[in-house]
Amino acid sequence: MKVLCMAQMSGTSALGQVMRVIAVAKALRHKGHEVKFLAGDKISDVVKNHQLEVIEASPLPKINISFNNLAEYEGHREEIMSYVKEVIKHISEEEKSVIVAEKPDVLLSGNLTGPLTAKTLGLPNVFIFLQPHGEKTVELFTRRMTEPIKKHIGQVIMAANLLLMEGMPELGGDEFAADAEQWTGLKDKIRFTGPLLAEQPEQLPEQAELKQRHAGTQERPLVYVTIGGGTPLIGESFLRLVLDMFRQLPEVQGLIATGLALAPDRLTDGNLPENVLVRGFVPGTELVKASDVTVFHGGSSTLMTCIACGTPAVVVPSMAEQEDNGAVLAQNKAGIMLDKQDLSAAGLAEAIRKILSDSEFKANAQRLKAIGDQYGGPPAAAAMIEALLGE
Image (cartoon, rainbow, N blue to C red):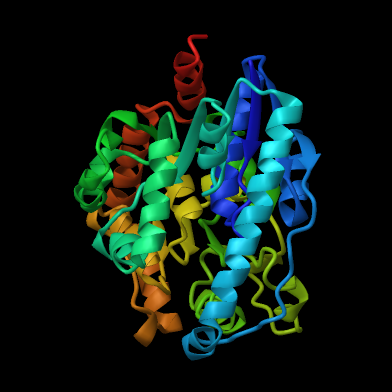
């Protein structure tokens, strides 16, 4: 089976969405299928890092508008929408050209152009997306959209032959199902997969070995702090607060990952606590599995990694979707969610101590992991795609 993958968005690329496609692509390749990935810009390097063959996409059109707040965005709304349409047209035309040249048996996509392009060419296609975990997320991504955008998204998901939803129905998402009843037959296309990680936790070394590898010690609890792509809260100012928090927790080993958003040396200015290591980009699944507590901003990829690894967490959300994601852990007592408005180093330290001292948090995190494992992850998703094509 020849599989063509793509996750290029309209002008931007959500890394979490890209990683979902990569996870399933790797599972298909492992089963012996020929897999290629249409990718450009920064996505190309991410895909190559997972040893997947890349078809280089041409550069996207550029826009010379910058804005720092909603008011500035509103002032350029028409210009931005015109640009988005231009980018969508560009991506769609390139997708069509590559499909005609490569002649794949199926298209696997995580973007809002792939399914429509595939349907136009009569190609079976699979669309991957994240399960919404609460009413705030649905409100953000559906009910507040303009009617033309909602219509477009409806056309996209109805064009897909199979919808792979990263998540588990036990975590909620009933709001999405209710909102989507307008799209006849949608439920029949949806298959839950559990977490979709590019690196499976079961294939990694045990926690003690990973802790030694990344933190240099197995003696103290490891607290892993990740800021993902960075947000108005989860940035340098937040990490300064985290350093103060670690000064109050000398009994733990801290590891802060600044990712691609912030250079590590911004924090290593000679005033670093002795029990803290600062790194740039790190293998996230390894660190979540190694840690006794993960601290993050509520991003969907880290949420799914915590569930897949059975690791409890402290969540400090900055937006509605992240609040819903954090609530998944808090409501299952597999984590604690803190309010960003009154966050303090002492409050963060108290939350970490509470998780470390109460074994119920770890037990509940492991319970969520067991639920997710039942859905099979990337191997199960790959089998679903094979079944779609009668393989």
